[in-house]
Image: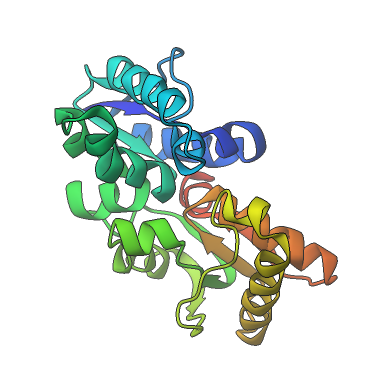
Length: 233
């Protein structure tokens, strides 16, 4: 399968190992993975801030850059939700491409029918449901199925609702005090699990949670699901 790899802004700038993990694993599974150099932001930050004209330009560019691929895969529930759920209203018509854009874990489980990808990781891990991935894409069981199949990994549930970590993209900028309080609650729940790692499918959540963990002096570390699964691919 010829796959277009879409790397979101935060992954590109702050978490490149997640993007590399996607590419390594999909190539290990026998697929052709291409990174079109003309890609830019999907337009979500502009869209969420009310800058519709700027978001429209970026949406049109996304469709133009990725339209030739059989599928598009991204390590970001947030950006995939933007394309699948909001491009129709922004563009005035739902692009055919929207049905071919997948978040990494749902692509592996629901499109390829895989849960065990041959990954190994020694440690106790908990999983954070990012809001866009859970509530807008309805992806909940897929990341857990993948984690449970990892050799040496112990998965413990977070059991906190699930609640938002407080990042919420522009929410954390507009309401920093509320955002920080939500992050404190999330981190406290993570620490109660006894896990040494917290894994998620969105870089924004991991950066927000990771910042609070660092400020608290917590030994818990963050890792993107794609990095965990594809790190030893």
